[in-house]
Image (cartoon, rainbow, N blue to C red; front, side, top):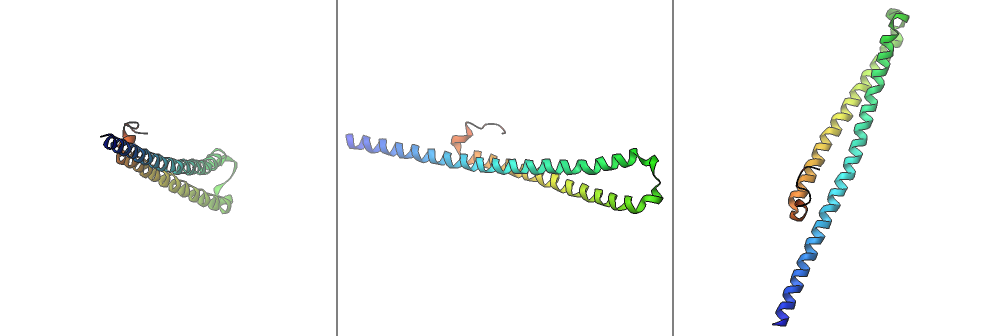
Length: 127
């Protein structure tokens, strides 16, 4: 009888160890996704910063438009405006890409939470 109880206790201990390892792996996976999310947020911040530069330049051009004649300075203004448009396109691309990646990362975190029932009790809502 004592041998059966010991085998059941060791079986329970190995199950607990297995669950603990599973939770540990899930937590490590979530930490990895969160590290990627921090990088994505940095790219988002960069995209917003790139977007502000052309807006600032255009604001200065509009504010000082009485000081120059467009036809006399078009050879300087046209390349500057083309550069501003390029920066705006780059900023839109960075922001869009970041938002899409953040959505994918959130979905991946939710998937990891659903796969591990031990973590579901700690993470019932959205992160």
